[in-house]
Image 1 (cartoon, rainbow, N blue to C red):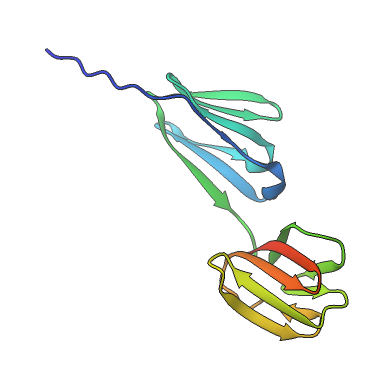
Image 2 (cartoon, rainbow, N blue to C red):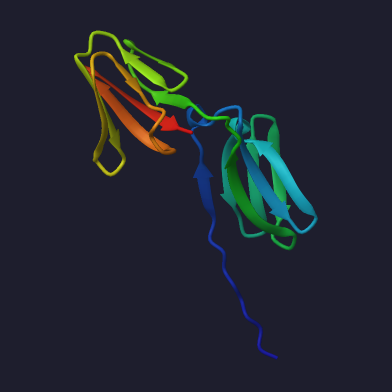
Length: 147
């Protein structure tokens, strides 16, 4: 009988904790069921020769390939907007963004299309579909996630 050797290279996925909110969850699916891990606690995921290692702020959990099925990232949000990065001079409350002193506020999708323009310093983001956007006004630009 001929044996088949499968080589799995070592890879690591490093997550930036500032992009994970308290509602984001990593599910490690195994033959016996799912293990839920708060994504805000995950610092590294490694795909090793013997299995997957998930490192959190509290230690490392290992999942052997013989029982490991998949990884799934999930967001359990009730809606609204979450700012990821930006400058001072803006505020986000619910679905409304305000950029102090801006004459016009525009929202740009990740493909470069301007999807919303509002006169003045405020824009209502409620009609935007879920996704990652950039809102610009005056000298301020802020990345945000619409849920």
